[in-house]
Length: 429
Image (cartoon, rainbow, N blue to C red):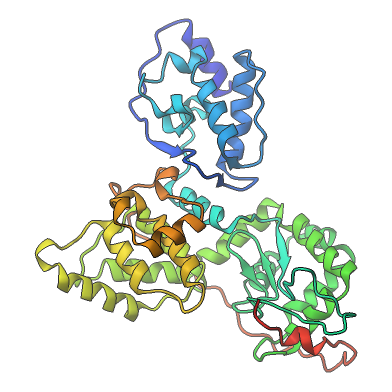
């Protein structure tokens, strides 16, 4: 029997016990949480619709994985239904539309609520504003669109080495070639259903996508860049690849493969582990918290992680505060945000970083730069996803390393594959 129906049956027979655990999992705090079309929020939206219908409500939530005003209002209305109203404490945040562990238990019975690692990923996904079925091309990001027939065609790009960006972690076909790693790992399983899904997703372009996997990307304007530029330069093929990734990324096995690659020591997992190693070093004796973990995840998705640089920053901070060490976790993250910054996208990175310490400091102490960057990034906060510095994250173990050697494929057999020089050498916006 579904959890909700069981609760309804028992409610009439005996008084419902009070729910002691009212921990917030997701809450609307002025920004929409983007959890993805296949994440816990989408499941909750479906379950809330069923529960509201049984309660006689006409309210229907859109099942889109977006935790915004509509989902908040639906959960607040659900809390007035007798089955929930009789169980939830009077001061429950669920009555204001938060998804709490109590509401989760009423909806899904004994199923554990989404872990802090799942919710940390949702905050990163919120910043990325994308999902597994979403792919975009990075050649010529002009507005209006690049026109090769113009008298003076100009191609602009702020990410000229990415070529393609796909999914919630911003996997690229250039740089680290995460796109190739994900597709390769998915197909290496050898299962016929995987081969079929790949072929059906990309259709006539499936062989071309396989060709991409074998091309060298060692040098600028090399085989991979030229090849993908040629695909992009054909509007029909450009659209076909985008639709292919849409179908490919909607598959649950593809999504799990995507996460496996990023958990790997060879990719973001190794970067996250570097953070944990620095924090727990005997020189600092820090205990990583849930918010620390989310901070590590978000930073690892966007920049190189240099342990020496972080150790130096923490050593300087500790030297300034020997009598009060360790400082509060939010203060430590703030110090890293302000002193260990990437050379590019410094303001954007700061705006994301503030989200991981704003709940633990006096907001009035934010500098103008911090406040402006945070505002530009939607005033988001880790607390809206129930992440807390009061709970330790535990031990972090990255996934096994994944072999990802640089392929050596060239275009020697296809000299007709060329790319306009202006596209291969774009200017910055």
